[in-house]
Image: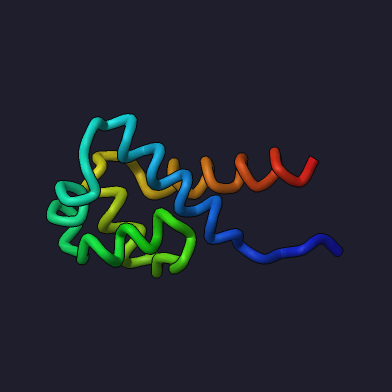
Length: 82
């Protein structure tokens, strides 16, 4: 059986890429998502994993479906396992 753990570094990198692609700062995204900037920063650095509620808030603030973010995380994890 493969390692079934969610890599927090990949989660953070994917969220950071979505944010950067939108051209917004952590400060702006955290305000739009109603989460603390330091919390968002810790998520993007892979120090914390977002709850589903937090991931939903981030996705809504970015204007993307949460499922798209989850799919991007899954794709990146599969790519790195090869």
